[in-house]
Image 1 (tube, rainbow, N blue to C red):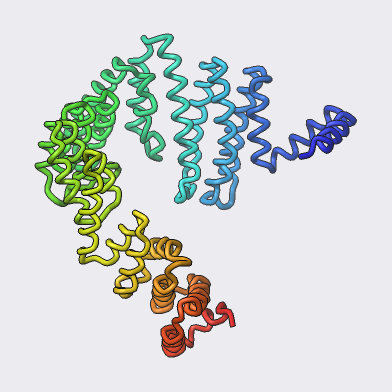
Image 2: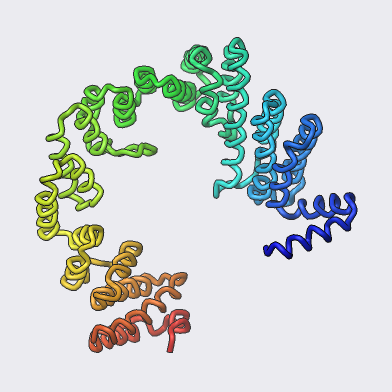
Length: 464
């Protein structure tokens, strides 16, 4: 906004009374979520904590009251998240001001209201759940300040958390132990571990629990083991669950992170081929093995494994990691070896992808021209990346890729993508003129008329 206009608005505002402005802002803030959030955050430092606490409690109550009164409760994920986000912002500001007990009380209320209020809400898109999780994160921060000043409260906090995580019908407390690790400290984590072990013993003797529920407490003990950064405890939990072999990769990663690379490598060597990946782990077994070998000073073995990994998938990432482990004078030789492997590859798609990654666009385009059938339309994202690289210097190769994308959409009858298909047809026509592909383009047009002339919703989108 220009300075002159800002000054004029300020002058006009001064002509209005304070009640007018307050009423106007309050009314607008009800419908404008960004304004509501900004006002809440701005007012926190200027508001008496008791008044603010009352206001925030009221906002929490009102948010869930709207859920209860809604005729379509399942649609309330976004409105509820939008209403609660500024509340958390204000509570965090209170925490930063040192109003810890006030903030903790509000966060406890925030959590209790969520547990009883979110029944029936469809949060398939993950809109509300992260907001509620953030409330637990802040709750843990508040308790961290409380127990830092009063460590004697940690055992009682451990007992409270034990009850909460064992009674979690909405799965809102999935990460509560993680978020309360600092608040619990080592003493509190040990107390929580003791309580969970007692419950685990009771669970195994409960005839009313099925096999899965009998192990529910052990899953929480695994989180406690991670909080204590103790891989042996984690291994013990998996052994008690009967999943030590299944969790071989996560166990190896924890052992390596704890500085026990030799044991980690032994775990990896014991894995069967179907255990080389594990959901939630950022590294697969080959990558983790390379890290183990490097840590143990076995660089030659690590390089051999990276080379095998590169030759199997022609991954630039593998080559870059291999280059990091190779003396600089040997980099040129390594690059030549890599190019030779790509040239001899039996997978045109992998080879072209590698060439494109390293900027060898001419080589990538040559592969496409030699084996256009290897670049089917299912490789949508990669095909478009190739097209960007090939335009404008390699129009013939780009034409083949557009053709494949177009035919894939029409052959599969993907109605929602007919707009893209029409655009691809326009691109083939332009590239055909540029590359002198009159005959291939006519053959494509004839095929479209022969196989797809009844797809009127496609032809309506095609430029005449």
